[in-house]
Image 1 (cartoon, rainbow, N blue to C red):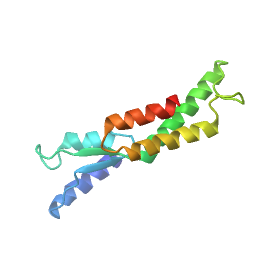
Image 2 (image 1 turned 120 degrees about the horizontal axis):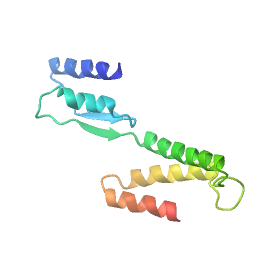
Image 3 (image 1 turned 135 degrees about the vertical axis):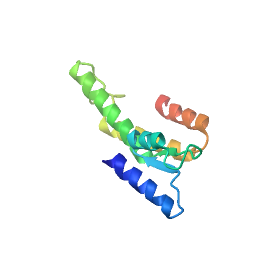
Length: 122
């Protein structure tokens, strides 16, 4: 339904002499792929996809929490009270640092990668 609604909006925009050329995504690329496949504005117009930074950091936190939960089920301790364990507070800090590193280094992928690796290693 979301894909069809987006297609309707994008087709309607041509009658107003307006074009959407960027999709702000929450990580789900079905709508983006659908719009690219339909070539709403013709084969010459390329639609770009941009990710929402909040959703990116949220996915990181979810993945870390899931990893802790899976390891706990296998009796491997990643979380807990020991020094260096992956606690909720640590996960929150990591997601915040990750988000800030992306914002500080937007436009420079290598700097973004290096900055995020530094946060994880430190």
